[in-house]
Length: 512
Image (tube, rainbow, N blue to C red; front, side, top):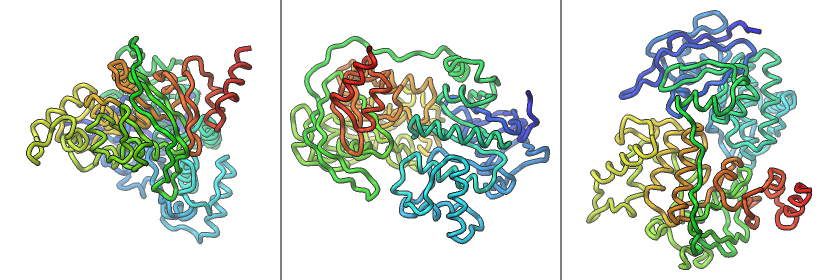
């Protein structure tokens, strides 16, 4: 049954120097419809929703909202009309409590006691348990997203835009979110939903608009298409599945022995007695719910957090006391989860960002001066080999879409030919085609003899490329197990802190 339109988009166009982000985009979202906006990284999704939310002004085209012309000049105007947005990257202050963070997003917040009561009422009504007095820094990633959603719901929106809402959620938290969205839909709220998780799209959405290179190339009912069909509509080509090349594993490349490390953040998770070995040619997958020590583990391995000298061995030599540049020189490289601000400097060009981590291994510094020509050539190599959609290496990192910046960050490290590569959330926020390409590049790197550690909350990703799997829980790492044949039930137990005989027992029961 067709629904009357809530928002209509007609011929929206937006161009930036060197790229047309949106080219005559037209589609509509019905009242009470959950509508997916799909496309590769750089297809124009973010620019489009920013125009709907009043962050960007279109060059051409028009919009209508509830049958009347709609041209928001700012997010304030969009919110006043009934449009709310939950962004992919949270905009919360860790040192403030939930109610204080919500108040910061309101034009005229009520007294804090009244606001706290409203937060409790809304969170209970929509199945999003939230204590308004808790510090945001103490919340899990899923709870932080609830803060963002509740802040939007307090505006009583008619259209809710959600950008990659499940990228940091556990399967249980995803189901809670979906129940909330279905309740909102039943009350007549329209939802514009952006996600690269296509099975979620098929489970949740009534309709889908697919963008490619800034243009609408298809509309469909995602429930009538397979995830693979949707992915191939997005890329306009057959989707390749990552495959591992047969190869033998070598000697121990990286060894961690009894690592204890206090988190540098008051809201972080300290590492507790971590011991593990990773061999040449091996992909070790480390899973865990966000906030269980992933950032600290990557920091300890990259050298950003100094560890006891003998706690970390690279090829048998102690490196725990060394900083990032010294470790990079020896072949231990890392790519952190937070790509904008940590892995890359947003206001610096891709050439400059390439030089930031590759200057040692690529010989880009001569007599104390940066070899700009060499740095530019290396940036161009990364852009070409990893299909980074950008006008060129002079473009600022912050101007790239999240997925394209992710491809650049991962490619920049892989092409340095590390002996050991540690990556946290390697395919966070990237489309199915780009995710497959990144995973294939990691498998190829391992096949060439490198040891690869993949820290990820995407269990499908870990199972697809890992030789062994270990779970991180409250700063403790389980003993690794063979990833082949590992069931979701076993993984769930490991993520909850069980390992060893308990996991093996579950495996026996499952096999019966």
